[in-house]
Length: 238
Ligand code: ZN
Image (tube, rainbow, N blue to C red; front, side, top):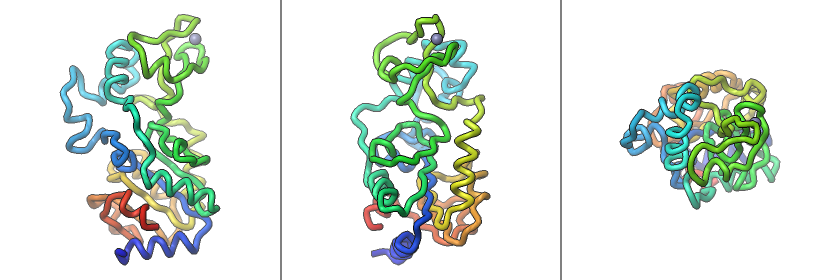
């Protein structure tokens, strides 16, 4: 086994306060495209760029176009948790992992059995009325055609954070608390280039900061351990 993966395994064995912070790279191994990778959504042809379609003002103005994109690009059928999701859920059951903080909106950590999942950007598995906030089953939004509407007339929207919208402050506060108190912080599948990832890492105060990412990140020099491997490969060995 790789020496670095062995080191990570040892730190996890010795700890009961591990926190995992994950980005798109955690889900790509389940077949969900990464918004920012070379083969990701940003390079696919659509009428508008994804960051425009996935914005608050676009949703308000062109809900039909938003929903075309949502159903075609955000909703991926038959995805399953991969070895990283499954191992993280096990580590929580073993009393080692305190929380998963994720930027993903696919609900795969919960599908794997994780209980404490802090979804910074929400989830496409939840929907609510943008006018009266009544919750609705996600199928109504993720399947079918046209713009789903509430009985009050309001447009039903996904419980995700669109561009131009603020993050949920309660979730952010709890993510900061977990990261600040973590013994081992594992950051995986994110290039740490964009907010809020880059900001959250600064709250960590320990000396076991682990970065698992295929390519290098701006935080490599600050990390105690850098593993440039696929998340799945690493988590199948710890
Ligand atoms: Zn309503």
